[in-house]
Image (cartoon, rainbow, N blue to C red; front, side, top):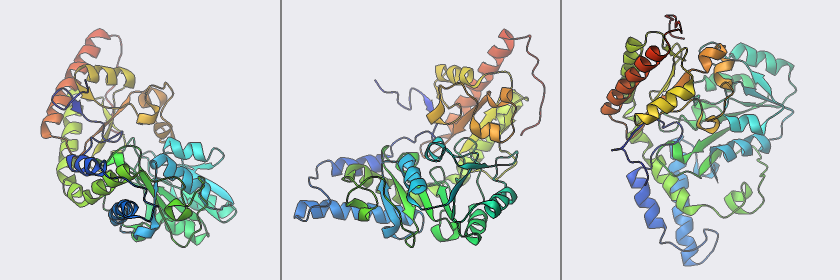
Length: 383
């Protein structure tokens, strides 16, 4: 039987948000439809109309035009499509990108970040000066582990000045920041439905219409930019989730207050706790907490036993023992990086979730201190 909110406290929205009820309703209605959106008969036209309505909603989420939106199977495919679809002489990526970007660009140079996890723009400019044009640069808008926001518009100006392209993974930003395609200045932007209350298995790449995009899946769908019959039911859900974007943005100040309370009370109970990325601008919904001396996996399991769902780093790397590339790139010592967990809030979060987390956090630290009296855990300032 699946867990429900009455059974557990879900604080892992950056991994996947719960399906929003209105999204579920839209998808259930679409289950009764029959037809292929590429068919010209009435059934197909009905499906096509629904698909294009969803495309308009996704485009509006980032203030782009509907024709710029290419539906994909998720953020990973959108990243791969961008990083393999543009003709470039070289590829540069930030050292804190999602694993799908690393996988798509195994030979790319990695751009450094500072101790707060913010891209080093001077280093980007230096790399661009010695890199053959046009360079393809990938920098995410919001880091999935720390919630730190990157200066995308400034990076885009540097990249374009040298004749390059900028791809932006905005998966963790959608629904949490106001997004405007033109002001960001990027050439492509990836989105994923399940991070904002939509279904898993559907995403989008928003593309500069002036650039040619080479598809890596053949076929005539999506204006020949991504082959394969569209996932209509998922796309309908994505469209509905995207339409909820303005409503979700209105809740960010409240969520920021809850996040700040969580961090404040967590440090009061365990003063050695460090808030990773605290010195940078962050989205309202994400907190990365490091507890020196307690492995992240131990914390995740202890909190899970208390009915609290959090992550150790990115969900795609959970269960693996290597240090987070993001925290390593920020210069955190391995012992500190390996003690970091991620707490993330979202549309169904409640004030009581913070109370439950703090109670479980307090019990976890008390038990660990009692069972490991030999470990000296120094008082340290937040990162």
